[in-house]
Length: 301
Image 1 (cartoon, rainbow, N blue to C red):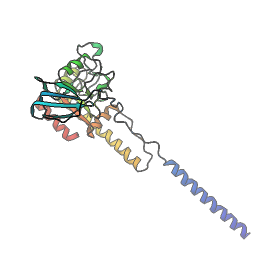
Image 2 (image 1 turned 90 degrees about the vertical axis):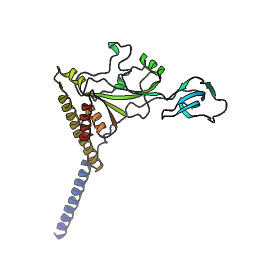
Image 3 (image 1 turned 120 degrees about the horizontal axis):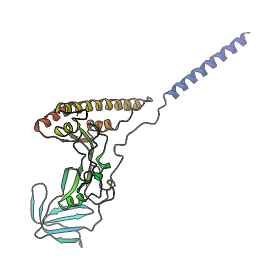
């Protein structure tokens, strides 16, 4: 009888041990993490490649170097799509292609930081007018690069005038018009082949007359104070969105099976500004408007 009781006791202990082990395994299984959700910050990368060309030396040319210096009878040496050296008596490899620039001037290429080429082509037709998404005051979700027409005739005329790089912006109808894109002014078939490698994204914003003119009869904003209220609410929503993603990152790093927030393309761009990855390009009409925007940047950005 005693042996039987001992056997039963041992069996019960074994069962309890197995049950506890199973519970522990179930608990571990419940905390197993799903694949981490990550957002690609550059889903449309540059495919630009330098235009091939022979190493070239320009001689006997007047050079303005862009930092305040003028070089008479100067020399400019470039190779592999880049300027290699600027000066008076350059040492260059033998047999380089030489251009006599006597009587001519060389300056750095002009960077146009506020351009609508490609999204508002010139000459203009309605079929290619793609610069303003006039559907609501906040359209930070749209990207100008998806409207750029690479064969826009204006690019060639701009290049003839010395413009070698451009920031292409959405228009000024909305409080937040969308992302900008920086392009090299080179002929290509697609926008990505023109895209300036590693250039930061920008966000076009507009204050003052344009948004209130466009939306005054569409439910607002219809005043400058309405404009500012719209900016503030958008930034507040972006801060909340950013906090949710920060919480998700922290919980996932702690080993929890955290659930990622629902993706919002509007707030994603605005959160990119808050984190310093996207730069604001703001269109204003009056100095006091810009002062108000600077106040707002201190509070939110």
